[in-house]
Length: 45
Figure 1 (cartoon, rainbow, N blue to C red):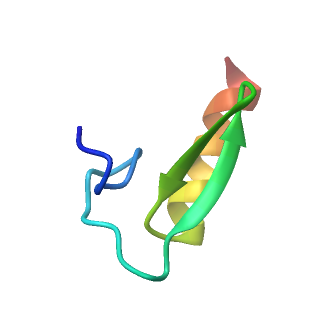
Figure 2: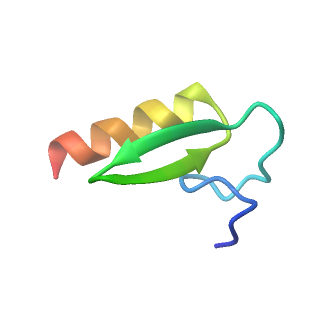
C-alpha cells in the first residue's frame, strides 16, 4: 500500500482525505465511511 492510497480500501487519496489516529499512529483514509470502519476495527481488536 502506498502513502497516496486509503489505508482501508486502497483507493487513491485526494484533497478530501481524512486523518484518523489509530493506536497512536495517524493514518489517512479516503472518506468518513473508511474512517468509521477503521475506528470500529480498532475497538473490536
